[in-house]
Image 1 (tube, rainbow, N blue to C red):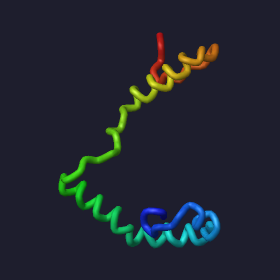
Image 2: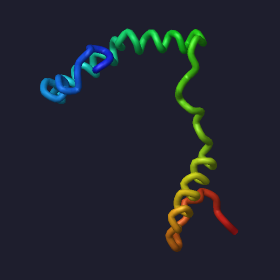
Image 3: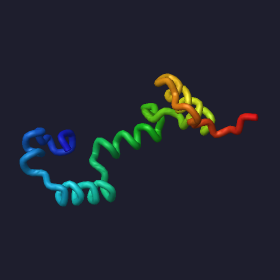
Length: 86
C-alpha cells in the first residue's frame, strides 16, 4: 500500500480498517497495481528472473524437517521421515 498509494505507515495505522483493506485486495485481484502488472509482464518476457525458488521435492522437505528436529536434540520416538525404515 505504501508503494501503490504513497501512503505512510502512520496514515495506514490511523486510516486503514480491515473492510477497507479487503476492498482494496478484492480490487487488486481484478486489476493489479501497475508495478505488479509490469513486473509480471517483464518476467513473462524474460527481462527479469522469478524470485520464487524452485519447489523442493517432498523427500527433500522431509529430510530438512528431520534435520531441524535432530538439530534441537530430537524427540524420543518422533520421526518426521516419510519413508519406512526396516
